[in-house]
Image 1 (cartoon, rainbow, N blue to C red):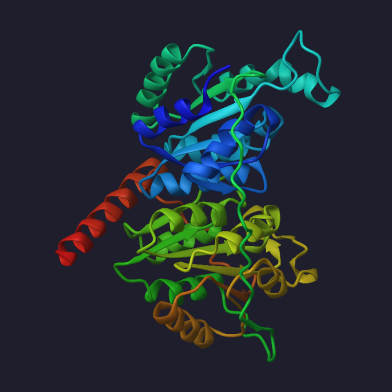
Image 2: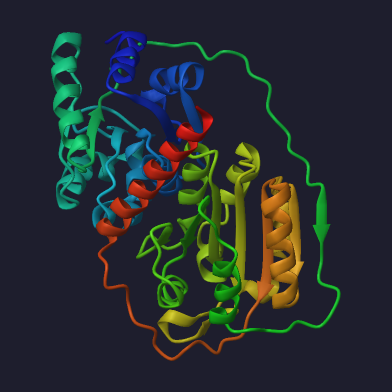
Length: 386
């Protein structure tokens, strides 16, 4: 068993201070340490934890993810279709429940057998932690080498690895909704391209736009390929988690998250996480066409879902139904002045622009370009401050 506090301090020396994860009894010491001493975001599932940590990484943080191995399966999608193509490095700790030869619950047996094989299949380098701290220091240096070369690295954690850390008593925060505006007139049903054009026309040098996977990102690319845009490819449903992590890491930037109904429904639990951590520099825009447009127009169940109510209940400061493009422009301009965590909901038509082209720039090039933009604008802010 290793001293968790000493191990955590070694992580801090290497620059790792941002954590996201889902609880596991094998990792409780490290999780409690992260909550007590670092910046820890409690995710509702492991895939969202990966995306939150990835957003923070885009924003300049060296990020850590913590999960039980049963949740590693939940994290496969973002690990393979977000972190791999964008080359976003994360340091992961995954417990080895169901370790062969040890007694455990029946639901852990299969995952215990395939955990390391799953990491190998995803081409993620990994290692076991040791009981010896000096050996672990060497392992952390090797892991950090992978991170600095834009590769993830995972440690597989066996039972009894970390000693106990008591969690400080903390009061839960409550963020009540202040403004909720439901639909009250006829909808315009603009095309997605028209709505994106309005959103894009209002960005400035402090804005980062994150567009969900599928035609949303592709159409934004056609409107304008800009250094402060990110076009999600794969990892469906993770755009709001990515936006949360980025908004927490880049508090002086305006983070505009452009979502779709199919995407939001897939990982809707993250609305509760966003509402709790409550970044005032994030606006979450849902363009709802009631279908999976990129895959043939199959219906979603969005027509049976009141997203304005849900976002308000989750603690978004303002949750607003948008009826037409002019109203979208008015609320976006108002948000730029007042800020505050905001959700805008707008129904759009199913009439997309044929088959929009895919970005010619590769995902990892989009990431590097965005990170250069963030560093450049950050330097400008510091220079102005002096």
